[in-house]
Every structure is written in structure tokens, then in C-alpha cells.
Image (tube, rainbow, N blue to C red; front, side):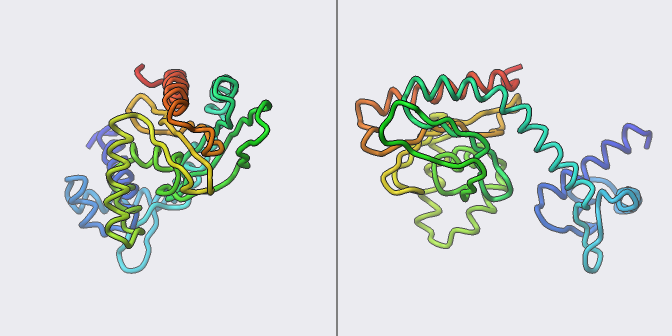
Length: 247
């Protein structure tokens, strides 16, 4: 193999380990990336020497600390790039609907709030702090991200839900979110609070974040709901465009 082929194979191995979400044997990796075990073993030796992968137990391979550190650094860089673009759009959205707007990103099986903009004109506000963590399968913000995640991420979440009816309900909600490009929940995380979320997508139609509006449920009347949904969707489309979607 030449240098380009070697790099491509090594990346295939890293993607296979990342998608597995667990350790793999050399044989399993070789099968997933469709290269001989001998070649896979040599590439793994090089990756292990550089801390990119590590051995766990008997012949089990996992991503190493250096690649995880790189992932964390990339995530922080992404958030630094996202926030300056998101803030003016969120401020405009909050001014338009007179409700709190929030921005969530995924971390593992959870969604974390990285920005919020509160309305100054409402007597009763929904308040959420930056850094709040919610399960991906609860609330509009997390579900909106989950709807556009890979099948493996969704499967991992489904495995944590014991009740079959709850799993079926979640699956239907995610399908609807993909079809309509938004999701609405009422009282699911906080009592008497509604949330309407739309996905922030990149150039590969992956949800990199979700943009939501949240407030007291009584202010989300049937007459007002459609207006808020369209405002959130339009803001999400604009932020996605600025993040490179469609380029």
C-alpha cells in the first residue's frame, strides 16, 4: 500500500471503532473494513504506538486517549465556531416569539445546553442554565438531535429504554421530526413547560445541534403554536446555512 492507501485504511479502522461504541477484536475490525487481518494487525500496531488505539483485555481494541483528547478539542473548537454565529440568530428569535431560546449539542447519550437567550418582556419566563444536561430521549432539544443521529447512536439510546411502548413512541417521534424538521414537547422535562426544537445541520445533513424555544405551556396556544414552529424552523435553517449546510 502507498501512503494514501495506508492513511485511508487507518481512518477506516478508527471509524469502525467509533461506530462500534465498544471494543473490537482484530478479526472484527478486519471484517468491518474489508482488509486482511495481517494488514489490520500492522496498522493497529502503528496506531497503538502513537496512542490512537489501545488494547483492553485479551486482544480487544478500543480508541486510545489521544484520539479522545482530539475529539474533545474538536468539539470545543466547534462550539467556539458555533456560538458567535448562533447568538445573533437566537437574540432575534427570542425577540420575535418573546420566549427563551436555547442551543443544545450532543455529548455521549445526553444533550447539553451551551447557550440561552431569555426574553426581557415576559413576566413569566422559562429559565435554563448553560451546562444543563438532559438525556437525548427526553425533551424536544435532545430528541431533535437524536432524530438526525446515526442508527448506532439511536440503537444505543433505545437499549436504555425498557418499556416497549416507550421505545415505539420515541421511534415515531423521531420519524416525525425527520419528516417535519421540528419536534414539540409539553411538560416532558419541566412541568408546564413547552419546547419546540429544530435541527442545526451541517453539509452532510447531520444534526450538529438543536435550536429550541421554550416557555410556559399556557403561552403555546393552538393559535400561537404554528407561528412559533415556523419562527424556530426559519432560525434553524439560517444558522444551518451559516454553518455550511447546503454548501
